[in-house]
Image (cartoon, rainbow over all chains, first blue to last red; front, top):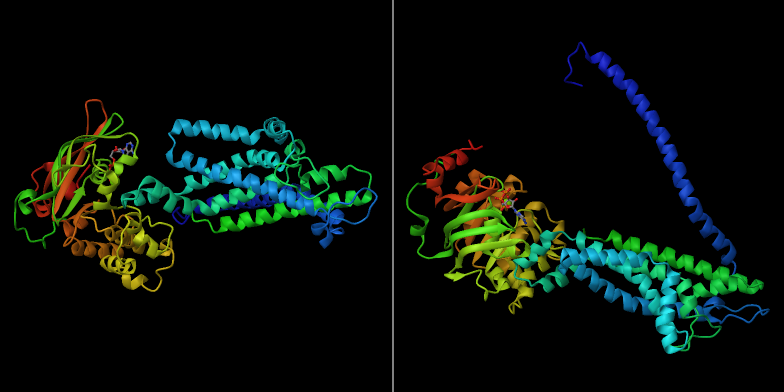
Length: 294
Length: 276
Ligand SMILES: Nc1ncnc2c1ncn2[C@@H]1O[C@H](COP(=O)(O)OP(=O)(O)OP(=O)(O)O)[C@@H](O)[C@H]1O
Ligand SMILES: [Mg+2]
């Protein structure tokens, strides 16, 4: 504007001002619209958390974490066995899917020819989209029928199949974000390919990989469908890897539908615990990404 | 732009300047897939001197430089024809271990690219991957001192290399490269992203380093080439029969000759800034 000549500058400034006020009005309208949609998006989240806290909060006590579920018509009790069962199966699933997933991601991002990488990435996306109940049926056919028993092993394997694509995808993305320059620098200093990957690329991607793993764990711990087919449920402590094993998710599924008030309350308390677990893992994931390097 | 302050003694071929060339190419053709990026380069890099590569963008300076330590091996489509000898030994012979080549011929890149590790770990990285047995603390102090960075960072060796300024990062990258004690240091526009003061520091550094190392530097800065180099090679691009552009070596001589008394017209035009 400073460059326009004096004769024509007043009208130009005038029209600019009018446009500006229109634009600022538009800004205000859009801000309001966006705020409304944000609120709409947040309502379900807040409603779910609030509802679960209201319903399950009153039941939170130490007993939940130390006692077994009571038989119908008996008061008190807890679901310590389901917590232990969930930990066992999610732990088993992580033990299987995290190393395999990270190795596949390293292969994809660092070593595979582009055509192979494209095929594997596509397969990973397909696996990610498979409904969890199908994964349950698959583990049922593969493990439960083979060992002729519902088991923590079958549950863990089913969950690992669900976690695997998440671990692969997030790790793959994390590795690809590491700039090629630092790989060149490492190779230029006489490092071999695997030294470059292990000493430079993976450490640089680690915070983002941790985030992916945490999200996968959060997803797996809430899954019910695959466990109904594979681990089933018991009222007792987990007996071993090849025995039916209780879990929080299946406990919610079983207890929410029965006509006993105590069981219903336990189901709500277990739901609250699961929601908290997801919240906490998300916070951990956020924290890990805050420390990210690239 | 002719640097008048430069003594114009020893007019002669670069070979005459130094008895044994460290690196020598003969009819070197460099391809990316079917694209001939650099054609028929025959030149030698003299020992303990600074050789500058100058020329317009895309003429293949970086491409040629990366051949010298086989870094182009990382590019899938890359292929080379002709001879590239390092002390008389063909670098692209099948038996040659590229990892070993890169330890002896180090590289500093255009953009500072320290590892996301501490300053200390950056410097000792090459030593660690090569199984160095000596005293790492001493190696760090020696390398950082040589790279004129020690005084600025000696109290914060544990902080991340990424937390340094651009000029400090580039000197860290130089320290990291010379910590491996290579014989040759290749520098691809090492000052391109630096301020004049950091540039000056790195140029002074090159004068120091050439006592011990053979240096090849790519630069777009004519004053820099005339200030730091003993020998200059001018590259240009031309259209091939198939309409592709490929780079070639126009002229290679003592730096003062290239700048004051070039044999080729295009060299004269390029160094005086009247190019294209
Ligand atoms: N990885 C690659 N794959 C295919 N072609 C490449 C690759 N790298 C460079 N080229 C091509 O090779 C030619 C020479 O490139 P190079 O980067 O060596 O030029 P340069 O002289 O270093 O240019 P600048 O001064 O801009 O850095 C260019 O035509 C470029 O497009
Ligand atoms: Mg270049």
